[in-house]
Length: 170
Image: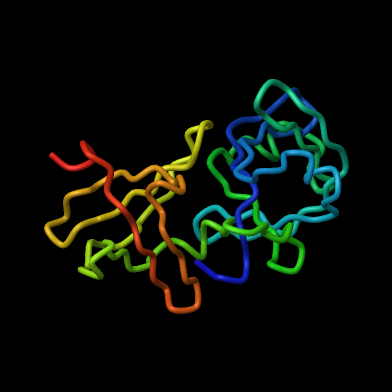
């Protein structure tokens, strides 16, 4: 995936008959959709620049109406499509915050500097994120993204140093 675009949501289903979609937000600031003028929708090889016309909220979802769609039949095939913004449109990260796109593929080391694995996914659990680290034997270790475990992250060097809490590995 292009490192210059960042995911802000995923279309989960249609909403109503007038071309609205229900979106699961993948951004920390769900209200950011109110400030967006456009998003890039990507599904497989299909890429479309869409103009945000209206934003509503329903439980943990965002309901979006795009100018380009006016009927349910025009959006019905876009379930699981990702919605993206450019880095320039992204909300800047605070200290010790990182874009998920920048973490994927980062090399993970233990406190003693021994190689531990590669970060392959970030799970958004609600309480705190969880880093999915794939070991060289293809096993996975799930490490909570908390200060007790994540000792340092260097995005430029593409390295992370972690402390394994008791019980994280059998």
